[in-house]
Image (tube, rainbow, N blue to C red; front, top):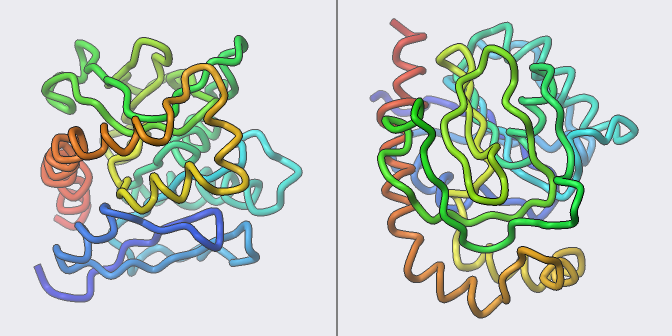
Length: 241
């Protein structure tokens, strides 16, 4: 691959980081061009010099129509990104935004249960190539998405059936966080916004999350390589050919 390939990334806070996913892509020769509409960045309409788009997670909701940055992202995904057919990955909030612009319902379970920490995710019958075996991934969410009409349901967990879907062979939404690093776990668990959430039903204690990270991050990163090689970056190659 020639150096200089660019991937546009969307984040939602000043402290946001692409984590291990960013390091993985950089090692493959990709440059990451980061935007944060929630801090005032204007998203580009011309995506012709990008190879892919990644929308990361954040503390906002995909239903925050009164938040200018979120509204801008939703409109951009619908009117620019999906129409361009550029490879797209939405993670957590990014997946929820993708589901919403595709017409699916997004919101909390309704009973107060969340998914915070390392939890098993299993493939659906249609997702066994996407996720060859049950894998324990890091999670941090209270909201979820229904599977959009016309999308393929790829993965589920015991508490939240909406864990992954694909749409039109070039767009992917995943609820879990394969990009997580130990530093990110520590930051999310100790931040002013994040620390109170550890008291919610379905949230694992900080120490348990760190122990699980030591045991589970390797498998999650192995899956990430599988996904990039066989799906996300493969979609880029297909678009370029």
